[in-house]
Image (cartoon, rainbow, N blue to C red; front, side, top):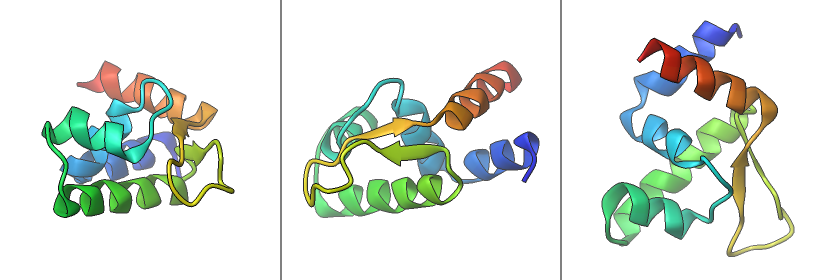
Length: 91
């Protein structure tokens, strides 16, 4: 996928874009939920978890501590940082 195709992928998902942009520094899912929605419930956790999975599939983010079952820390990859920079330029 080209850089612009990946940017399109991020932009097509409103929630996915919010999750991606919230990862300006490493975070756990509950921090992302609080940033985006202001409160936590299962629906919000599910939305964030799905977006994290989609972003990982495209190699935009990675898990810092994959051995952990809870409290996984997510951060952007180098490629993810390139996409974020270009995405902000286009907005």
